[in-house]
Image (cartoon, rainbow, N blue to C red; front, side):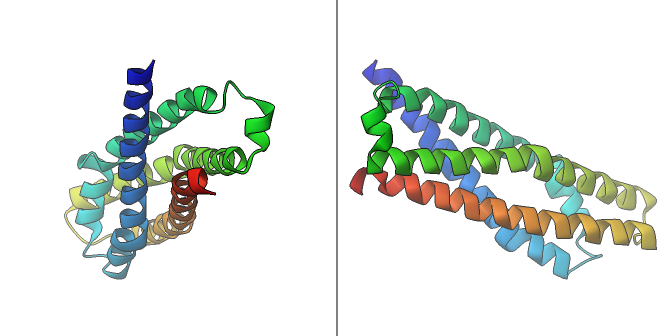
Length: 171
């Protein structure tokens, strides 16, 4: 059992590091830069959102982090012991888990589909071989705005989840 816990913790922590770091970097720095350099950055955005594999890696890391975290929750909580769940550590870890799950749901339901559409529009522009049409430019702007808002929220949620889990043992 101890080896399983070690493996699950490693998967949870490493998956969370990659997932959180990628979200913060992407939505805090990369996408604002591509937004500021449109339409020149359309090819870069298309590559990043579609062909680079980043979104697939982020999805895999988030799934691994969540599944390992859920598997760890029962043994860490003493099989959902009421006293543990009411303890400060239990409440802080539970809140961190809830915030992480909410960030994952936002990624699955909003960020992923929006990024895929952004990649598709970028590929359409690239295939046409010229600058985006006014309709494509408007859609790029709308999609990037949506990604910026929801991605920033997800980055904050993941940062908060990571912080809560990191300090729960010491509170």
